[in-house]
Length: 380
Image 1 (cartoon, one colour):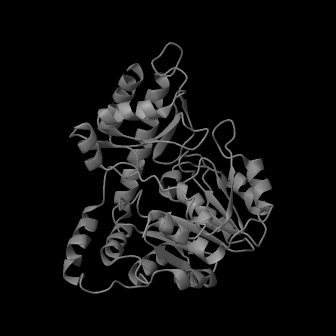
Image 2 (cartoon, one colour; image 1 turned 135 degrees about the vertical axis):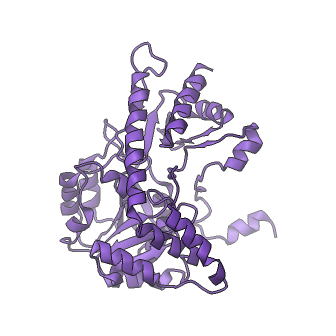
Image 3 (cartoon, one colour; image 1 turned 90 degrees about the horizontal axis):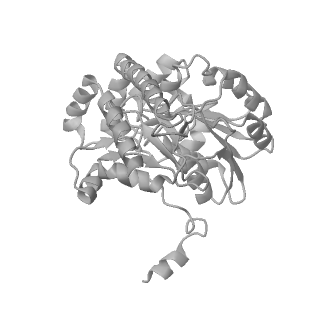
């Protein structure tokens, strides 16, 4: 069977899909560049890792791995319901929140449906809708690299089947405050499924203007779901646990119809429960990361003035655990020079953003290394 025959058998919507850019592994960088000491600043991971209680929970699961996990994530479901006050039946769990994005697209989208989201885009907000044959409208940033509120209100007023609103935005880091979010809510008709992706929620809470999205959505007429994850602030990226908080058990029931029954494995469930029951560890890591983010911002801006090595550098507003940088030059050679120094960042490849890269906030040492490597890269 030839590749051309295989392609001809695939659905027409699948053939043109781009592959998601998951970035380079440490192993790939070591093999390609011959470096041993790696600074991972590409995937918005938590440099402080999981808590001791999580490590114990993972060790204790070894004796049970011959059994299937709880398909309903019962213990984790009850714990999250207890703290959030949301009925347990309005929670849904996934193999990372990206799993829930895919499930939502499978439930609601058909060829020709309209989806609205932000540009630059988190890839799966575009890829999964297109996989289902939907049309995706990407909304541009404003001049300050923030949300264009007018564009969002006009777009949702057209009644897209799904609106994916990333708050904070990934890869930019900007946010909608309560007043802005209220305007988007008012403009969104009841027959649009409003999906608020809060993957970076725990970091955004450090901004006093960040909205209480759940409370505001409870008054909405129409379907909605808020997505959160254990991958970022909770330090469990390698285990893949995400959850959604929906307007109704009915929406969750529809998602359960297409959800793989064991989509969150046993180790992931127990680790997430242990993390949830140790919020002090998460809060400490988040507070440190937010402080380090602002330290890095100040360092970069100090080098961006007239006559300085980073003259002209722009930094997007961010309430997340990363910064989105406009280098004012193509990002490819700069990224390559950083990789040769063992520093992994994420260059953005969308048309119009080829001068931007996203750098995750690491430890203080990681961040200092990035600054020095960036200076060396720009001088090369």
